[in-house]
Amino acid sequence: MNKKSIFLPSMVAAYAGAVLITVPGLKNFGCCLIVPATVAGAMYFYKRLNPGFNSFTLKDALKFSLLTGSLVAITRSLIDIVLSFIFRSNDFTVTLPEMEKVLREMALGNTVEEAIKLLRVMASDIENSGFSFLYSFFSIAGNLILDIIFAIPGGLFARNILNKRQDLGI
Image 1: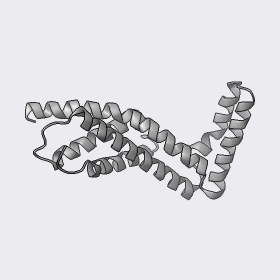
Image 2 (image 1 turned 45 degrees about the vertical axis):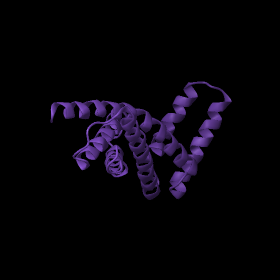
Image 3 (image 1 turned 90 degrees about the vertical axis):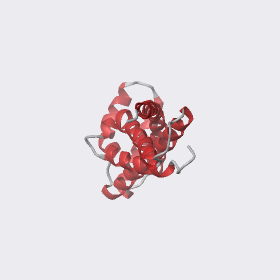
Image 4 (image 1 turned 120 degrees about the vertical axis):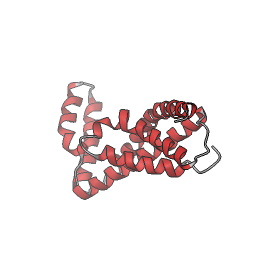
């Protein structure tokens, strides 16, 4: 890859993927469908921006996966944080009572009560001020880990498809 930067195609695809993941009905498909498709889209956009581009190497696919996965994670977390600030509610605050029941049923001892206290503090912060530093930190960290993990197979799959299309002259 020596032509144009991979940043612009990754940024455009990541923003589109993050917006799709925020849609309530599509949120469940975020990790296993939308994130890999986002990386494939970024690689496709890159190939379209560089007409003389030959093929993606394994290193190229991993670069796209890491960059696009990171951008999706950060963007979707920021969208979630902003919406939580505006509405003073999110999926976490709504499902907290069910989480408490599940944690108590696990019977892990005193650690469960400490975890529930921490979860209640995060929910209380979101409901009162619209922002919780702990929730934001865990949201960004968790999304980074998951989105990068699921972006890698998407990049590798897209590499094979896009290179095969190049070989076939499509």
